[in-house]
Amino acid sequence: MSYTRAASGADATRVAYRLWGPLRPRGARSAVRHGMVAGVREDDLLRHLAGLRRANVGGRRAPHKPLLLLWLFGRFAATGTSAVAYAEAEEPVSRLINEFGPPMTSASAARRRAAMPFVHLERELWQLTDGSGAEIGTNAPDRGGWLVEVLAVGRLRPAVERLIAVPETLARAARLLLERHFTPALAELICTAVGLDISAPEAATPKPRRRAGFAEQVLRAYAYTCAMCGFDGALGRNPVGLQAAHVRWHSQQGPDEVDNAVALCVLHHALFDLGVLGLTLDHRVRVSGLYVARSDAGRAVHGLAGRPLSAPQPGQPRIDASYVNWHVKQVFKGHESAA
Ligand SMILES: [Zn+2]
Image: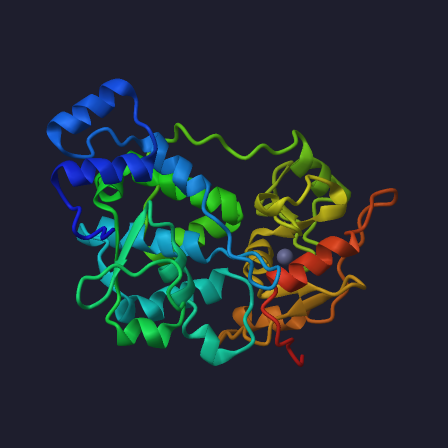
């Protein structure tokens, strides 16, 4: 069936039923009577966002769909519509995936990374049509060139747009995606990149559970010092600007254990999560060859290359090789610096 045809009336109700599952009896009757998707609730949206199917791209994490959705949320918040031609979205969405997704070696493929989520994003959330208005299914070619050629245009479903028009719902939806696919250090950077303000009061989405005392244990294991640069600032007796960084991310099944963590200053934590900084199996710091800076302070990061990571206090485990390997494969932006 054509999704574009079913934009209003009873058809829309049937589409809503099929897409959003059975509504509560009262909501369902009301939806039928009003011939609209009035019964669609925030819970349904959050359920769909939590259940995004993951593409298996060579065994790597694939945050392509969450990043496309966050970009669409930002666009919707700024302009009041999420409708966008692939040709227009390709550059900014691909850039987002290159920045916050796993590394990609082929520069030509990197420019068209937006094609995969554009085609495969769940149709419960998203409609994709060609220049003639005909529906494009999830089995279409996920190639940027083809999408440009057929004048593909995507848009979040009207029911989704109505829900995210409420700032609190938008914030909860965005937070859910950020917490499931990224790290707290990256969440803020991603929000800035897509122009989203999710500072609305927290509610519904439960925080990912961290083991109590984990951060303190890691900071103590590294003597309240950044293991990369030695920063050990404190305000009176309280350490400042220091964080416990997961090597394998908490959102990606990384355990809250000292052998999967390292104490880092805020700057080096952010750069580590972004893949600017990485580790070797013999616990030395790596710097991505893609990192550039103009000032002395910015260039100081290059000085970390090859430097041994501080060892934890006696009796505390070093980072396990399996977690270092995960970070190398999933996060570090290759092309090691010659420095
Ligand atoms: Zn540091």
